[in-house]
Length: 148
Image 1 (tube, rainbow, N blue to C red):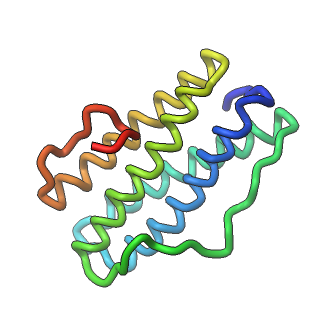
Image 2 (image 1 turned 180 degrees about the horizontal axis):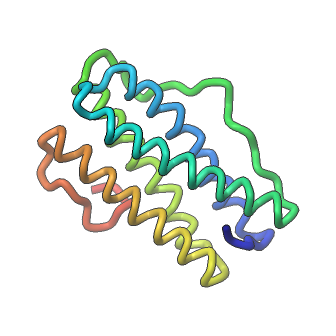
């Protein structure tokens, strides 16, 4: 848990929104992913839930608004089979990395920036795992959260 400042609320709220969307997306991924990936899907959604919970706790403890998840989210493309499920997971991790990179860039305190760097690194690792599943080369991006 971190103690955010009021001026950090915007980027932290965007990260919270990205985490809400990621949790929803992983529900879709779970429905279509190759069953051999179920442990990976479970671990990834658990990581996003933990980040979401930490953000909600941090924002509310600081007296800041922590918006709830939307009722539903649109996927950026149809998910109909294991390859498209893996593609959605990789895209989701990229989208989350953009939000966490913004927190790193806009964080005012070392505590917030450290938390965001840890979150950004974790999402970069998850993205690399999904990119490897898809056979994308390279698996990693030089600067997570920035377009390749």
